[in-house]
Amino acid sequence: MRFVQQTIWPFAVIPLVLLLDQVTKAMVLAEPRFNALACLDRTVPCGQIVLPGPIDLTMLWNRGMSYGLLQSEGIMRWVLAGAMLAIALGFLVWLMRADGKWLKLSLALVIGGAFGNLIDRVRYGAVVDFIDVNELTAGWFPWIFNVADSAITVGAILLFADQFLLSRRKPSNSVEQG
Image: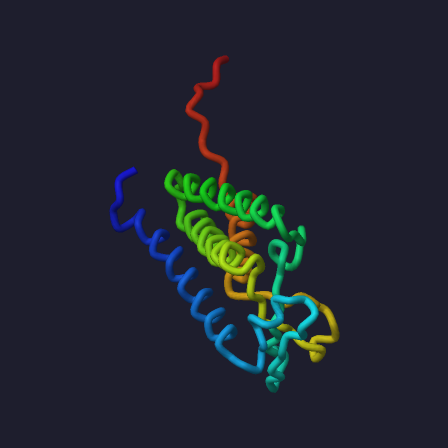
């Protein structure tokens, strides 16, 4: 693969997602009202900042994958981190071979988000989640998430759209024989 302007831009998206994710998480960890590092111990409550509108900031340590799936601790933390790394690297290889701007964007978003959450899992054993769609939404979205989760979700939706809704059948090179 040659790196030219048309192919290199997705590789700029990955560190942008990673930077935005890590900066927002650092802000949460630094805010005393969240009690973030102390509440790594499950017996200590984490904090919350109630905001006007449909979003609150609620500190939560997610010991699983996106939206709390596959909760794990101890050795399983490292198994999950290894699986996340393998998936991210697989998507990176796919990105290096990918054609199409939507496919490249979707893969870059997923990779950036995966690495953002992987950094937390390695550093803390859990992922910092803090975006809380509150009760004003009538409970239709009960999960607490972060920027990385958002990038992964948007990337997955774009990937689905690209692969199943936007892809066109490529013309066949075979000649009909009659």
